[in-house]
Image 1 (cartoon, rainbow over the protein chains, first blue to last red):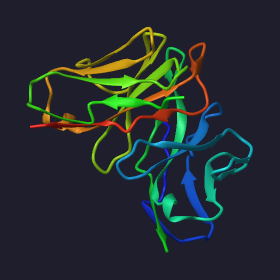
Image 2 (image 1 turned 180 degrees about the horizontal axis):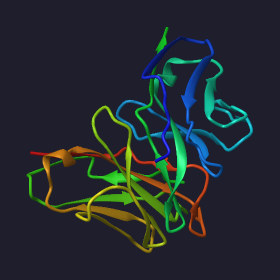
Image 3 (image 1 turned 180 degrees about the vertical axis):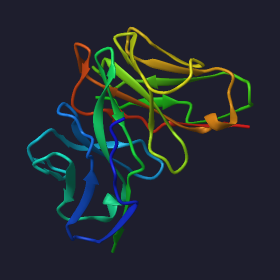
Image 4 (image 1 turned 90 degrees about the horizontal axis):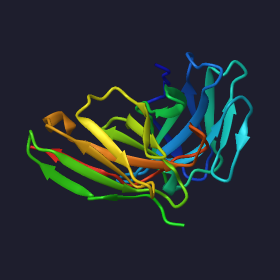
Length: 113
Length: 116
């Protein structure tokens, strides 16, 4: 099984950048790296995804190591609304032409006012 | 554009009973996946439906089954409930091309199932 390793928890001060690391040493060439976050009492929410190159969108940036064995989600200015569990996920082929998202335990991000 | 909606939001069942959970996909999405999330854990993939056919399954026993309807809404059925089935059940919809799921999945808020 493709797996990811993330710190259990991290803290950040409000309005400061946050770098959330993820290791995925068993990644295969066709596995996309996805990030989702889950706020309390809600379903996961898509943040960003990438394959090889760094990616930016309105929510965050994704930096992918050259060997693809690790990646970092970057929140440029943390707000209180960014407090959530962040999941680094490999989109894995699950047979019959379908792909599944394999979640780990994620990183619980706390944002300090 | 409507989001993913799940019903009911909460449910209590007795061990050995059967339960059906429902999910309405986001408009235009033809692929639905179901996940089980135990307390303090990340979601675990149960199975996926694409155009009314199951086309991927995680490590769950056959008593977990599902359906997808022509309007792409979906049901998750669990027979012979066990105490360990107590969890948050999440439905996610996405737009698949052929049999491949692309880009992001949109999740519902889940159904909290308690088995006593």
